[in-house]
Length: 276
Image (cartoon, rainbow, N blue to C red; front, side, top):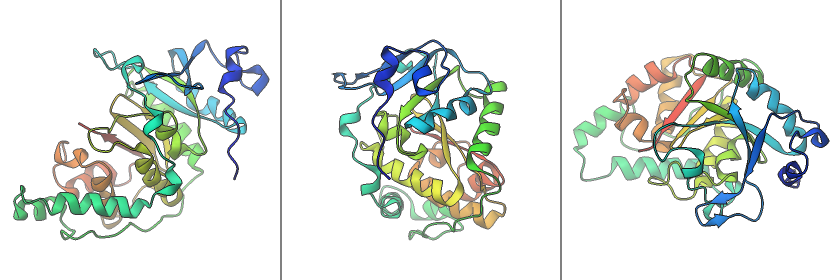
């Protein structure tokens, strides 16, 4: 499917988005990157905080090639959007990468590291062996992925789970591409080219109905329409999460894959990732 031209520049003269069939609150276009202004806007960003229904309302932008995401406006010093070091120039195209190849390489790099005790590694990745276990099986979606995302995101906003979220629209082919399309560098200490991570997100979008619904300075929150319903399914997905974001396990509150699968994945429609 051909990529629609970037409609974000049209919001410069039409900030309400009426010409694009949108009804936008007050906001601004963002084109500032790590190296200075980019040749076109990377995203539209609302001035005020999002309401529970905001993500769902912005889905109308898909018709013109704009996809919604909530930006967590972290109040900690150096973590506001202006300090995010957006860097679209370093991003490749997600479709050029093999998600399983990346996950397998990440898994092997960690589990074969001689600086770690092999017995401790076996305990960390159990019930899997140290060899890459392969991708988890796809699951049937329990409802439309957009409906899942709308309902779950509304709850995340209403309960204050997200940190001062603001609405944003990004010119992207699909939800999984949003991080790479806007030049997000949250996991830069782990992976320079975020398009590789977007390739994994694409795979999860296809297999589990994933939607990227929120981004923070170094966090990514997604929803899934097909969460694991058995511990075995959760453990298979946990292996992929370990390859995608090792910090979720090695520096999180669930310190083994089995515990992470049971406490963070089993029956959960929200997947949250954090990189140190």
